[in-house]
Image (tube, rainbow, N blue to C red; front, side):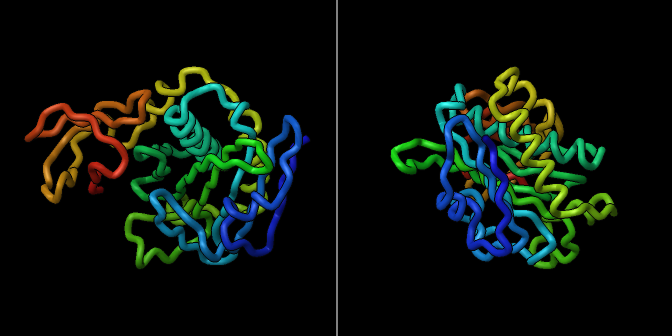
Length: 234
């Protein structure tokens, strides 16, 4: 049995979903269009304008996932990327490790947490997708499905379709790394990076199974980096 729950308002869907029971062999998802205290990666906040964007969380038992947590992170990013690409018919990319980019603007972010609830270990996948928002004055690197495609999408339809797509894809585990690298933002292109407050050019080569990103830097050569060790300026 799988369930999709709608909340008119939520502090954080990743938190509120923990109030619901996850039954045997099921997926449980919760969504809202009004999230007041959303969180992103590394304790960053995810600000949300009511009735313009989607906050969505999916909970499933960790025993359903047979791959490493690093690959699971890449797998989840690829699922969200593919969903948005199918929805928009546009070239959607993944900015390592799991930001979703459409026409050089971040339109979606992902936060994965591992929790123990009622003695059951679960993964909670939080997804925020900017759908109808037009004002990104304070977030110049962000955009929405509407700003990037000039098309308006129905919020409820997107939530339901995302839930259905997750159910068909989340337990698959074929060629995860290859699929992630196939759509890696700025792969094999010259980018500008901030490393220890020094800017230099570099070329993203690939992400590996341990979660590292390999970059060929003009000053330091080929190096690998983990989350927050280097910043891509775009």
